[in-house]
Structure formats: structure tokens, C-alpha cells
Length: 317
Image 1 (tube, rainbow, N blue to C red):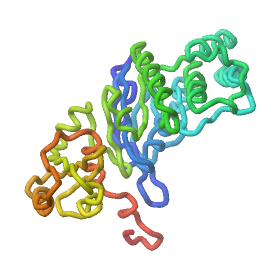
Image 2 (image 1 turned 180 degrees about the horizontal axis):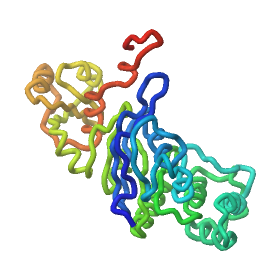
Image 3 (image 1 turned 90 degrees about the vertical axis):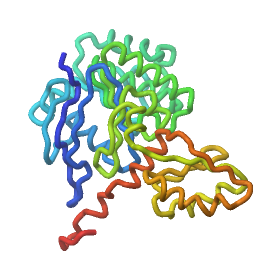
């Protein structure tokens, strides 16, 4: 078993003259859960598809599970479990029939036993005859994960697997992911939920096709050197838009009855807050930065890949 389940460098994919994934380096250790944290359109899905052999990179090289991502893409497909954003199984087949179909695709020699094990592992045995189309979001998610695991992969690539799933189903799902990691299975899971990101061993923050930060949650927060103030009081929600436009302010976000204002230059943020300090009924105090503060500020400083793409005449957009 190699030290890195994923080890790629310079991974690049271009569409219409724009780098959707721009020279990404990514290493994930065996048995680790790595959170791929980014907004919609940041390049997470494209990166995952290149890692599992479904897309060929325009540039870059590396390995997944010790296999070359370009020369051995077909072998990677057979050894990786890939769960797409959208439910991709047949809704007019039962749970068992879907799993049996996937087992046939992988040409598993002990197909019935493999299906039985997948049903038991994900708590699907009692529902095995139920049509997939009648399942709730949480049960569809279990079925999709069971299909990912039926061929006993050592690497799971999960693309926003909990989108549209209720909180309890999300928590059950993450408990299952940690159980799999404890068994030595490596997981790369894309998400834009901060609470999910906090459950990963490490994080890679991505926006506009580029990696903005990586490390544990604590390391990313510490490395951002962000200064944050909390504002509480009457009418605090009306301050959001004016503060977003203030010089030196990188992020403004509501947290319950408070608003967090963050930036790297303390003096400039203090200048933006000065008029508010003269208002009665507002309480302004320093606060500890959280992951959401940091992530929003990172995106605010990132270069939008749409703004640097070339149009048909070769001019900068």
C-alpha cells in the first residue's frame, strides 16, 4: 500500500479557453478523509472526474492508488468508488436489482454474496425489494454508497454526497464514512457545508479552479491571519451590504443575531467600523475567526477564472 492514495501534480483542464482546473497539486494519505471545500463551479467535480479516469487532463500527471491517472485510467475506474452529485442508479429497479446490476458491471465472481454484504453493510436488507424511485433522499444516498462499495474499493471519491439530505441522514452518512476510514479506505469528499468540512481529517479549499488553502481546519484558520469583529444589536442585519463594500473588509456574514466582519488589515477594518461605534445599541467586539469567515475571505481574494479567460478575439474578458 502506497503512502499516498492520491498524488497528482499540475492537474489542468480547460474549456473554451478557460482553466476550469488550473495546475492543481493534490496529495491525500491512505486512510484519510480529505474534504474538498469549494463553492459551486469551483472545479471540484472536474477534478474528481480526472482522478477517477472519466476525464483526461490537458496537463499534469500523477497517480491514484499507485496507478497512473492517464495511462492506467481504466484500471483506476475498477478500483475506485465514485458517487456523483445526482442519484445515478435506476429508479424503476429495486435496491437489490440495482446492486446486482452494479455487481455485474464489475464482473464480481461471487455476485450474490457481494450484494448481500452491501445490503447488510448499509442497513438496506429490509428494504431490498423497494423500488429506488420511491426512496427518500437519505435512503437513496445509502443505496448510492452501497453501490460505490460493492467492489471493495480502497478509494472513495464522493461528489457533494449529502446535498438535499436531512440532518440526521447526513450525520449517519458521516458516521459511515469514518467507519470506512478506520478500515483503511481513503475518502475525498467534496462539499460546501462548513460543518461537514469540520468532520474531515484535512481540507483543501478550492475556488475558480485553484487551491486557496490546505491543512487541518485549525491550520487553515491560523494560516489566514484573519481579524474578526462581531457586531450585535438592533438592526444589525441592515449593516451587511454597506460593510461588504467597505475598503479592507474581506467577508461579512450573519451568525444568528450577530454579524461577523473580517479582514487581514486590522486598521482598515477598524476604519470601516468607526461610524458604527458611534451608533447607540450596537455592541462591537473582537471575535475568533471560524472556518466560514476564512473561506469567504479566501474567495474574496481569489482571481475569478471567468475574468481572466480569453474571448473569441483573444481579448481578456
